[in-house]
Image (cartoon, rainbow, N blue to C red; front, side, top):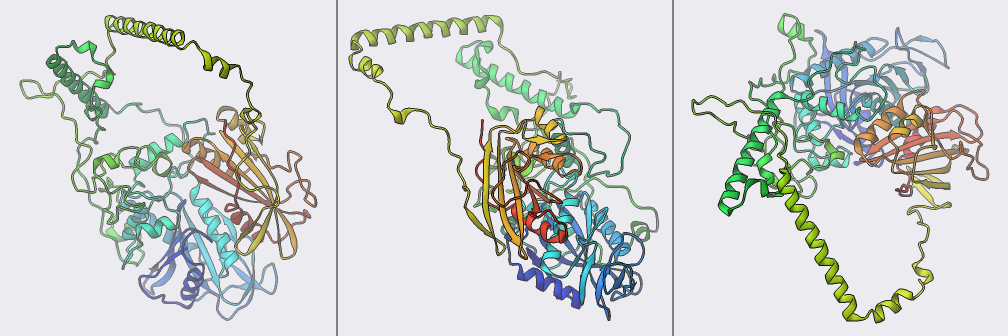
Length: 626
């Protein structure tokens, strides 16, 4: 956890929150996230409606530290109406918060809208913004116990377990329909757009909190749309909404599959490459048809930049005071303006200088499809050296000076004569190889070779069944001060038949390349807990994100835990009962965790949820591959 306080905290609750987060230490050992003190006030009395902004790789949340004054007991929080406090669960007297009011939800909603407006003005698409209320004071409990009020509102007490649960649930809400994780450049640009003052976090610090490295801002509307299409192209069930428009919408007519401007530029580059190839062939005394496709330089088909157009610079970040767009301008909210150029990033060596080179270091595979998707650099991302890259391909010009019409053509194919000549040459080469091998066998007599061929294989040469790498039953692992014991483990090379519900249907068309499942045991407050962990290798980052989104949906089924398939352990339960759930995706791997009380009794769901979140870090064998 990386707490950022550019200015000293102003309230007692704010100071208590950042003291607690500082105690968690840096990095992802407890929870990878960034919490920046960015208070927002409203009205002439400058009443605070939020105190901080939470960034996790899955999304963003606004945070309010609500101090309870002159009251103690159990707080009952509701999505609507006043919150209450009493000696036990149930209605009590109206809650009194420092600064006025009995519920912070209305203010947090306005703070979330303010953050969304600022980010979009800076060219960043925030997606779904969660809202987290942290209650500070002499409180004895919270109702509901998990603090989930629905529709993105989370409530937590100012103590480690409840606060960690609230952050995890806020991240889960923000991750829905989010086609791309927040990267290091995205977070730095968002902090600047929200008015962060002082030294911002470094690339290395953000990397340590789980944000994938990128030198370019990727959370832009024109980049998120292709990422969303790629993430949903492999047969995932249709979503009811998107991160850009979470409300249900009627189907819209499909647009063109190819951008005509980009296609024309690519065709122009292909024609120019053919003309240069013909010139090289003429210089060498060959016919153009005899040149193989490998004879064309890869640089001749460089990526195409976007069509030129005016770029509107983002508005300067406003002050911390919240005012709606209509109040700021005196008119209705302004329309969304075209996004600006990416925010420059000072550090370019977040992974040991891997991205500090020239254009060759910034090719489409430099970052990897897992970290940033196929269009990670963006169509108009500048080279760190300052020169635009890749260079635009000039369109052919006629003698009159007007652009010539460019046919949309594909790669040129060899004529039949050239293919026949190549086939004859290949057959002649094959005959020559056979004759040469026969001469070698005749000359050597095959003495030692025959004897070696007749020797029976030694027992050591027999194929042995592969032993899965990783922990074995009896292995212990200490996570967050709690000891976990591995009870059962199994690996499979397929997920077909190892899932149920919609997840099983998903695997029928998009099978995984490996599956590892395990049962761990631990205890919480003297009560035995079983933790089911499944690690799925989808072999593709986009398919992994689709699986996690589907598994996170209520009622969609899941990967079958070992108890469901009749594999248990002495003292363990027959099935999971009232289990809490956690999931994570990293590259092609999806990790799904369920935790349950062994005795099957309910109660203390927050404790189980914390165990489920911690279970994501438990060691697992490498999923078996095909």
